Length: 476
Image (cartoon, rainbow, N blue to C red):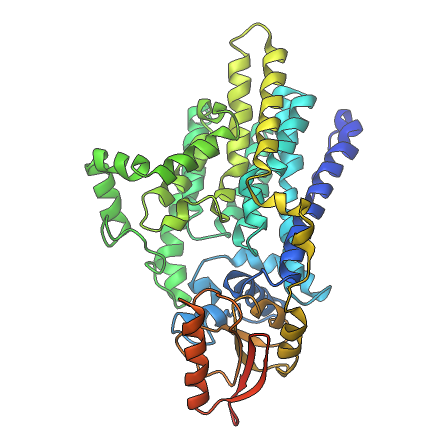
């Protein structure tokens, strides 16, 4: 998973690998504790588990929890939702442990796997000390923290692949760089945007042929995935369309953005939350990422979110910023190297910048997810855990069950889990939680009303304790 270091860098092998593995363990602990204390969710941990479970069984990557919620049934391909065939790479690990814990550990390792490649890139550009400081800043950065704090997602593959792509192109190793670029296209349907931006960055650094090839790869992938592969899998190219204010298609949206630049500027900068996000992302590198063409690789992915109608896409609370975090740190390194060439005390400037970047990373710890690790209460078992396990224990293996959002991850390894929501799905088993509010319910009272409606529809209450209710429909 981690790259071999060249002979003259061998003394640093232990240091770099230690940083990477300590980071991986930290990320894994955060995710596993959240799972064990009922903080993980059906959306999205169960969705990914069902997908990878399908690959592990050498079958289709069905995601019934997502399919039923969308009204498309149990035999819904994950590829019809988000085009992420790269999840198949995780399937062999289910032979070691068949459950969502495997996904959490794999995600932790993949996020940490970007560190050696970022270190190599920074070492080549700025020196050893700066390389360690920048790599450490990445390891504790808020995009990584928020991503490992929220279940698992396809973004787990992006930092390492983007770091490999940038570092290998910089090193002149084009084959592994192109392989990493191709791998990015297997992560999600919009990753072609990143390649288009990176192609522009390569062109600006006088690698015009490589830039053109990478950009064409990205453009071709966008057209192929959205226009052919997602519809072939049973989905629609407008499944996640959040741009009705710009039109009903990509060409219409692009035309409006280009035709009305003032409105485009307002869309990008007209909201305080968007400005906060842009400042935070640039602050990771003390704004030196803006002095590097590499920032062009991140720009389309960020703009895609900022011009949308979905406010969650420009939040700092979720995993979306991890798509660009490795790129921004590489851009910051490149920007620092460009600045250093213009001053006399080059090494002093470089070290001062790297130290400041590391300090910025440390100052973000209390604000974002990693601060939980220092709180003893984070590890405290759920106060109704005994009743929760007793309730889940009544559900037989192999059945379809509608489960509360925070209970589904505990059942997904042995049942087909659907989200328990206001729309009844007809599953023979239901495990509800009336003791606390949970998405997608408007209120606890709404959830209680639903349980009564299920009882009136023929469901029997088999268990009721501490807010947990198990319902079963005989003959279901």
